[in-house]
Each structure stands twice: as structure tokens, then as C-alpha cells.
Image (cartoon, rainbow, N blue to C red):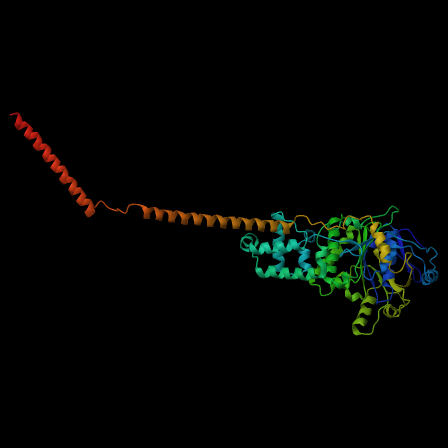
Length: 503
């Protein structure tokens, strides 16, 4: 039953295979709760891994973790294998790396603010054009001033700095208003309250660590613990969109390949689109369209196909549709939408079959030769080879401890970045201001001292301010003149008397 270059999915009136050559043409797994979506996801993940294709999958309930443990076929698995004639069925185990944005059930997953970039971040924060412009200016300032934007505190600090320098920066790049800065800060707060402070930082996830292959040539299955993450839909959407964008930017163009370079499974995909602005949906559509040429396949897993925007839904070529219920008008519409996306099979009504499928059954249509969709088949999905259901916490801890990326991401790195640099600048400015204030106060004191000294010196100096004599001075001078005259007269008489005596 196993065929090289194909993944065996199960059997309808014929064996159903997914051709690895078209594995990067994306896919969709849908169905109501309890109809077997997780088993179908595990079957596909096992198939890609066995073919040497690395897999990334979000694990909502923890059930997918069983792929890391050797299966022990239960009764229903053995019976189903017999029912579909799966003679090659055997127990197996697959290489797994566990990840967790919160670092509790796996290696932490982080990205830097710089890697996220202003355009993608603006879409995640649902900013308007003016606010997005201010965010772009902020990133430009960071580039020009050599400020690293690694985590949320870096971006918050720089936004505050830009606001303080609004007049200077507005003159260079355009108007920066307090209102726009405030709106961005509030949007960041919403993201932060959902746990984004765990996601933004270093060491940032290296895409190469999601594309590992073990010594036996099997692709590692990277499983993201998403049970807690589901309570933070904005953060979940942020992470998924960043990951796709990062892959698109880093991976080279490969065109059509024999098998994908990497395959993603995004469970609870509606969280990526619920209440999402059009700009965000456009970005997802763009990435999904273009990332195929990078050799990456994206598979959305959700309850209802109407959860996926039509523009994105049109890109999903490989489909596994489990049972849907049609009790309400919305559910009836969903059934019709799902039925209309399949290539009809004259043997049955697709719309009727969707509501009649049992657990483990699905309508399957994949791309065949020349990329033509196969005729939809009512398929009994093959049983997984690894354990079905979650592993124990102890087993998970053991796998994490022996992981090929062990020690690379477990410790937070908080090197000097925008926050620290701006804090340092603020302290230096404060010290400079205090020094200037101190110097000014000292100079003022010196000026006051000089003035007071001058005043005191003047007060202690003689008070004569003109050449006019005082009465006392006039009397003394008059007395002196009188004495001098008398002495002069006496001297004259003495001389004359002497002359007379000589006669």
C-alpha cells in the first residue's frame, strides 16, 4: 500500500494518496468537533516526516504529542487497517522537537521586534495609515541611531523618545503626533497583556531549526504547545504570520520540487482570521500564494471552511473534509460551500455525504498528475502508526532534555538594546543638566559674593568724593599759611637787621 513519493491517506473505492510533488500546493482539513481532524493531521504529519520532510504543527489539545512515542495499535486501529486493506501497517515513532511560546511545555519561541518589522507589526496591531507612518518613522530612527529593537520594552522606550523629540523628528520625516504615539502604545499594551513579552526577545528562533532531518533521514516534527496560546488569539496570529513571513524572506526560490522543504499545519486557523482587518487578510493571502515557490506547504485545520477567507481558501488544493452538521442556516451554508469546492463524484452527492460521514471518514480530494484535482472520494482514513493521544509530562520532559536544540533557546538573552541605550542617554542628560544647574548656581553665588565684597570695600574707603575743602581742612590750611608767613617775615627782618649792623 505504501508507495514512494506519495503519502497514503486511506481508501475510498480506491487507495487515496497525496503526491509529495504537490505537497507544497497547500491544503485544508475541516470538520466538526470529534470527527477525526486530529487523526488526519497526524497521518499527514507522519507521512511527510517519513518522506524526509520537516513538519511544524500547532497542538491545541496536546493530542499530537503522541507522534513522539512508539505506537501500540489499539483494536480500532488494527480493525481499520484491515477494513481498508492496509497490509503494510505497523507501529512507528517519529523525531519530535517541542516548542512553546511561554517556555513551559517546550523550548521557548522568540522573535525580535526588528525581525517582525514595521509593516507586519502595523497589520498585527491594526494601525491606520497615519499610525503606521509614525511606526515606520520610529523604525527609521532606530536604524539611523543604531538602536536595536529586540523586545517590547525597546519599542516602548523608543516611541517615548520619539514623542519627546517630536518637533525635531517631524522636521525630518513628517508629522509625529502625541495621539499617534499613544494609539500605538495602547495597541502594544493589548498584545503585551496576551503574553507578547514572552515572544519578543532573544535568542530568536532560527528557521533552520525547524527544518531538521534526523540521522535516518526523517524530518523532525516541530510541535508547538498551543493550549495556553489559544487564550491569546492576537498573539497566536502574530506568531503564525511572522513565521510565514520569515520563511518567505529567508528561503530561496526552488519552484516545483519532488517534495516540500517544509510543511505547516495551523490548527484552529479561524483564530488567524477572526476580526482580522483586511490588510492582515491580504498579507496572509499574499504569503500563502508566494510561499509555494519556496517549497513550503501550508495546511489550515479548522471546523468550518467558511472560517477561511475565500481569497485564501482558493489557494488550498489538497482537502480532507470530515463531517459537518447542518442544523442552522450558517451550517447549511458551510456544507454547500464545502461541497462546491470538490470535483464532483457521480457516485454520490457531495453535500449529502458531508453530513453523513462517520468518525474517521472524510471526503478527500488532492492534486493528481498535471495538478488536476482528483474526483472526491468518500475515504476511510488510515490509522496513525505512532501513539494516538498525548504523552505524559515526564515523557515530554525527557524528549525536551534530549532535543537537538537543547540549550539554544532556554535562556533569555537581554543584551544592550534601545531600552538600555535610551536609559543611559537619559541618565547622562540628567547628570549633565544637574551639572549645568550646579555650575550656574555656583556662578550666581560667585557673582553675589563679588558684588557684596565691592559694596563692603566702598563702605570702608574714605568718603571724599570731590576736591572741595571741608571747614576743618580750610582752617588748618589757613593756620599753616599764617605760621609760614610769620616765619618768612621774621627771616626777612633778621636778614635786613644783619645788613644794617654791618654798616
